[in-house]
Length: 149
Image (tube, rainbow, N blue to C red; front, side, top):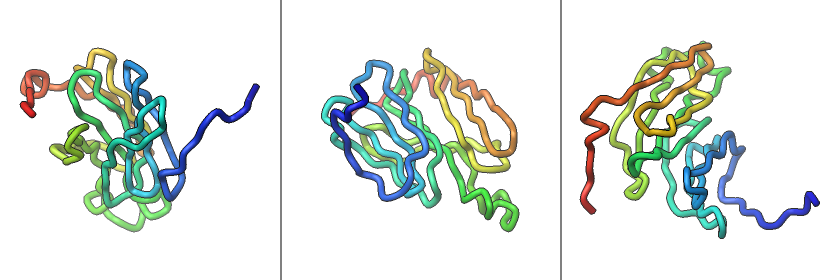
């Protein structure tokens, strides 16, 4: 019917991306307010917040580990006035539960606009304003990673 069933407003700026978890129990959002947020799919209650210093254009939840990956970077119109090192165009990995960043993957020369994990969780892809799509395969250290908590 097109009628709104429920909604929430937990970001302070534009939402750039929404991606569900594989079992449809939660989803992650990416926003220009420099955060990505994890939400419960049914209640729309915010569960976790992942904070960065730059706008977040895309975020994805790993189907294999309790990890999320965020991508973004500075505003596109500012890219030509600063070096790529300052722009911080890395894919950033956070622990899903603890909200702590534990790794970065370099490669893009402009903001990352899109991220997706492969369904088996053994790789992910990123697409950026530099025109490149990059496919990243995880090494065995990542695939064998366990965390006791």
